[in-house]
Image (cartoon, rainbow, N blue to C red; front, top):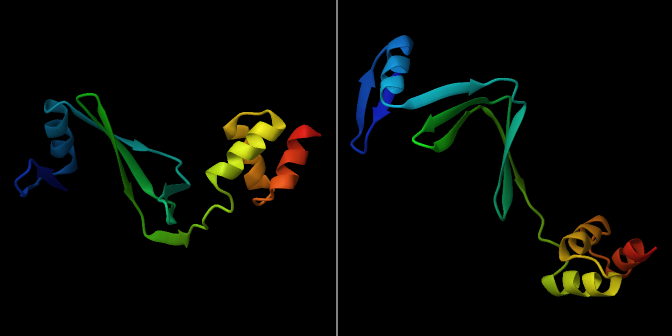
Length: 122
């Protein structure tokens, strides 16, 4: 096992048991997360889907860091929303609901304003 220590690229070759002890002494807790089926990283333009990943959680000084490793990776282009913020406000006002509820109705109606309003008022 190799450990990356500090800002300088210092790599130390140690055994797994020794590495775990070193991390514990530094106040770093590394725990595997079992049973993870997939990890999805959502960006504005795409989703990165990692199937059957190895996931570990590293806890140090109140900070949680998740390490994800995998080979079965798929990138999916995300479609632009089919409605605008003004559409959400219009549906929210017409149906007398919150913007969140209006946005969900618009998403379910594929951006159709009339259908979203009817759904929320019927």
